[in-house]
Image 1: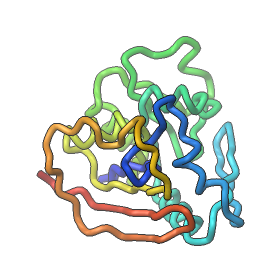
Image 2: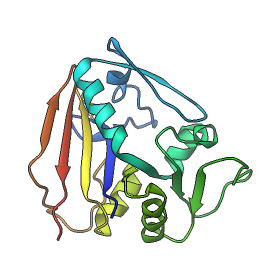
Image 3: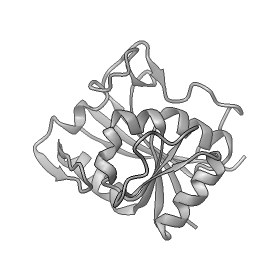
Image 4: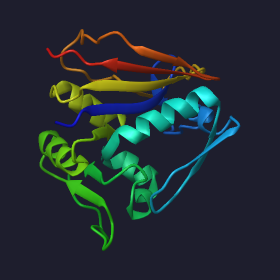
Length: 197
């Protein structure tokens, strides 16, 4: 069965975005290095990271077979041009937005809950991992006991306020296993297994 992995960048004080929804500070490490990483998809991006971050990203991305995300992340990313770089994307939404689904797109909308979204993304991943984006979607996965791992990139910045990654958890403390740690430049990459409750 596919592993379900939360993938987020956050500030050291736990925010994934500033009060206005801006993410520049927590994503600065994606553009400050000298190693170029190109993504695929309909709206390709080029990251410029330092070598430790390049190893981390290449390893993580090679594991992915599908993505699961929330509507806010989908909107902020402009729908990834119809095709997410890291595999088919499943967007948790109350309603399907106007103009979607689109012909030739690998973006799918799931309106019947987090369990269904994880099931559909897992089936599409064909044995590879499902990456989960978005604070609310990650929290829903944790609350439902559907998350196997947390991969968090801790940026060397304190935001002080904004959107917290772990704001609304039902059952705390949530126990995690021992992390793997990759120190980067301006970021520390942590991967924690989630212990079953």
